[in-house]
Length: 127
Image 1 (spheres, rainbow, N blue to C red):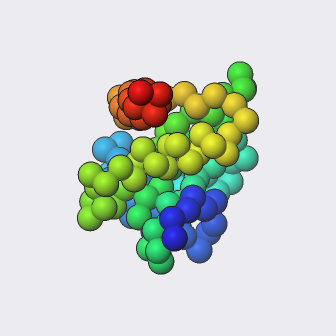
Image 2 (image 1 turned 135 degrees about the vertical axis):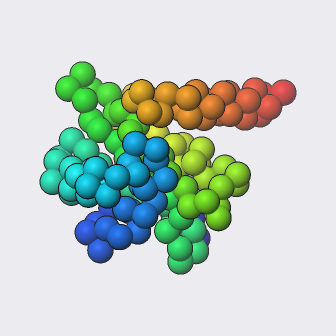
Image 3 (image 1 turned 120 degrees about the vertical axis):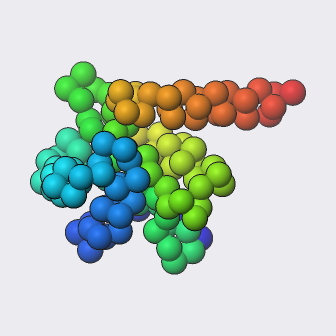
């Protein structure tokens, strides 16, 4: 079973492990601050991607004052990469949002790839 689940503190070590794959989260102190921000700040939300019994990905958002959700983190366990999990996580998050999903400077390229992929899927469905 595949699903997007909301972060809870019992997932902390898994979340830190996954977030450490983001280039700007390599430093342990920075990584701890990031997870603490998701735990303590209402505007920041972290979601885990679960496939069968394994948590294999994480996606983090910040809700902005102008009504958007900014994508800050998208990380997939290297053993599960190139399977489209990152794109599936973004699509699942979009399905839960009542606002636009926009990229942060760290995720702009990835979100562009997701948007192109989604556009290709829609075009293929029409044809």
